[in-house]
Amino acid sequence: MRFGLAVLAGIAVLGVSACNKPAEKTDGETASAFVPSQTPPKRKPGLWEQRVSNGDVLQVSRICLDEATDAKISFWGSQATRDMCEQNVFSSRVAGGYQFSSVCDMGSGGKTTTSGVATGDFSSKYLIQAESSTVAPPRRR
Image 1 (cartoon, one colour):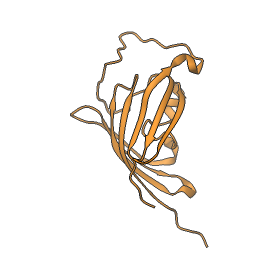
Image 2: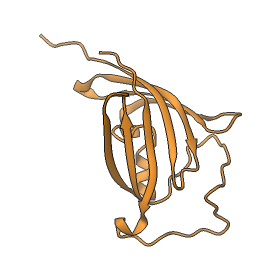
Image 3: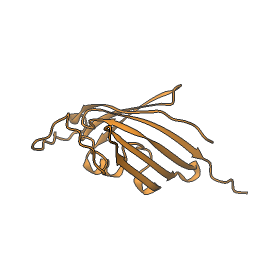
């Protein structure tokens, strides 16, 4: 099975209090700061709403993030944790934003290859545009 998937993710932080955690403050932190690096940006702790669309269907979910959860779940594929992926490549782009690709073994769900671009401040919102394809595992007889 092969398909394209456009992903719109992390539209807004709905509120840190919704996760029953106090807001974290750091000296000099600004929501508009955007410094490309070779490590993925950290999302602000709190309740995030994620909207995923393939062009026909819109799926909305919510996830409560803290530092530990953000470290385990990549921003470009919250369904697949990093330990399921044989490849996770991430780099900053000259024009701003981030480029990424991953290859993840989903077991009986097949092997999924994803590549795309992420832009935003990751403090209040970000946008992911990605292409994803899944190859089903061989059938057992």
